[in-house]
Amino acid sequence: MALAAPGPMMAAESRVLSFSGTLEQQPSPATPATADEPASDLITALTRFFQGIGRMDAVLDVFRAAELVVEYTDDSGGPAVTAITRDGLSWIPVCSTLESFAGWLQYCGRGAETARYGLISGTELLDTCLPEFPAGTGLLLDPGTERALALPPVTGIVAPALAVDRPETDE
Image (cartoon, rainbow, N blue to C red; front, side, top):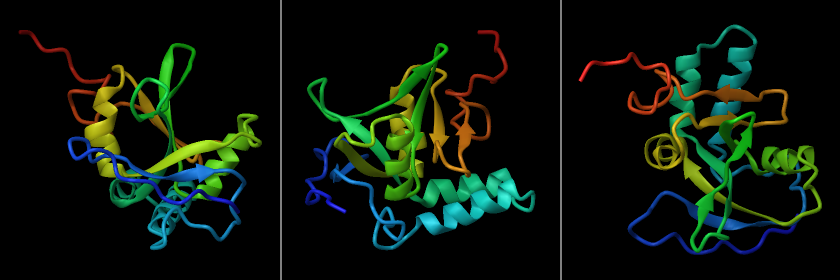
């Protein structure tokens, strides 16, 4: 595994994404997103959910506490989390480990490319980052894996102002 040395944090006015490196080769299966392996709780919650013995609210609680891996680009003059658009819907791919991030890149046919990634907490992603995307943007957790989960922008997952299923109000 070859990872570039960790880079600096973003400027103080946007403390959402910490730059972690460049993924040049697929990490070994034992490589966690961070040294503390907070993703193991998230993977356990996802596994329990798909087995029918866990609840979505438990997955979301663990998701908010987890440190997640997202791809970023700085092509537009500053660092930005990347999103994909399919059939008019935007989704942010989010991975629980570097291994699942590398797998996602391979799934997309980009396994030989160098990708830049950052670490962000689930809370920061939902509360600070997601509101900066177009309305209706959802999250894809561990896409391309057996535990992939779509988190659409609906009540209970995102803030009420971002939820696409919020009731219409008369103003």
